[in-house]
Image: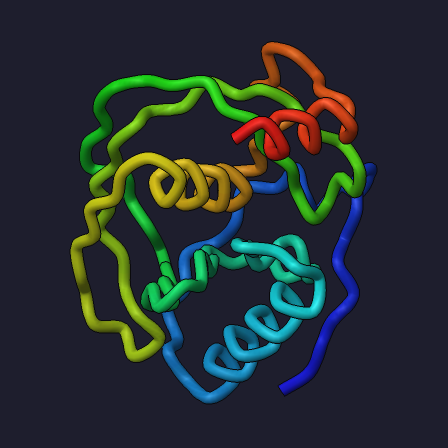
Length: 162
């Protein structure tokens, strides 16, 4: 396992639609392990393969706090519901934050690292993170969905008020 460099904007790899994974082998497992290590080392909660330079449909979300690590290979959004606007950031856009409108609920079909199909339902922050990472796999950046950019001190003030 290794920490890889994170691809930051501007870089064309972030704009590419990723290819479907067809080989579920040790190379994929190592990539997922490296992605996880990279995400943790960067204090992130999600990462997609293009953010480490690989244009395949693989992404990870880990909210911590006893939650399971979600590995999504070839994810497909099956259903969404509700809507909310919250502040997002991205490892590929250091120090840029913005309010983004996303569905409150998502249902996804994906494969795990062995190729087994599974279905996942998520709400609120977890749904937002999953949708953010799936967007990366389609070359969609969160900055294309920002309704208002937010300064870091604004975010810190909001957290302090809670």
